[in-house]
Image 1 (cartoon, one colour):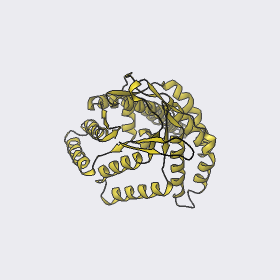
Image 2 (image 1 turned 180 degrees about the vertical axis):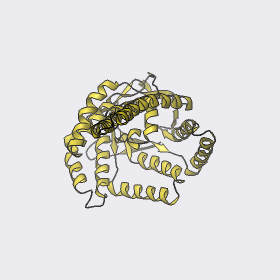
Image 3 (image 1 turned 135 degrees about the horizontal axis):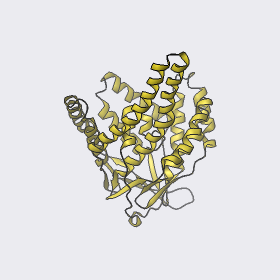
Image 4 (image 1 turned 90 degrees about the horizontal axis):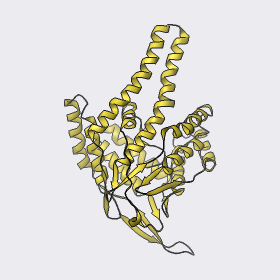
Length: 331
């Protein structure tokens, strides 16, 4: 764990803490290859146990204040969570297919297709976001104390439905308000033991940055949005606190652009074999740019673990989308 004392102008020295990551791409590559071989032999079933091995490695190589994190999830949990998720997907898919098959009219085809896409976007996505976040936090610990998420899915629906609708009909211009509300719900209901995280952002602060990111996306061939992504990252973390300490991000647009470009080239030219190095690079790149500043009494935090199912994880695995792996500036 990196720790430094900064002297702000006209103020007291500020203690800055950082996560440190010690993982190596080569070590993770060995795990990756074994996972692939065993997944092939078991017709994909080992995938869930392989995912746990990767998470165990990534957590065990992450350090804060001299102690490593630990992951407590199991392959069995992920596998049964995936099976439960399949029930939801089969119901929605079956309903959509049945309407299209037996309706035969053009209207029936449209209705069937809408049921499929609306079901996934407005039902499965929010369940997956909350479920995956709850499960991941409940299976993560530091110094033997578990993280937890205490929000309810029905409360998330009240935020998600209107927010997603307004984002779609405004062609993305409403997204800063939507993203801030999502992050506020997810962060404010997140705990480390008995201590709570807090976020107090306002979508208005990001509106014009998002506006120009949309407007300039095509003229800049998709480059300018990286600068907005970095701005959003800095804003999200600057409005996030834990106990009496304040987070701060030093992410810059140019750094993010080069980082993502290199990652993309690595994956393309190695046909995906560089994925372990990309994961290691991503962890190190992110942790190096997030600081936790201010006084922090970790000794007063007590264990207050909450259980969770892996159903949300199962949906994210099926949909295979990084957004559902929590792409809201949370990491």
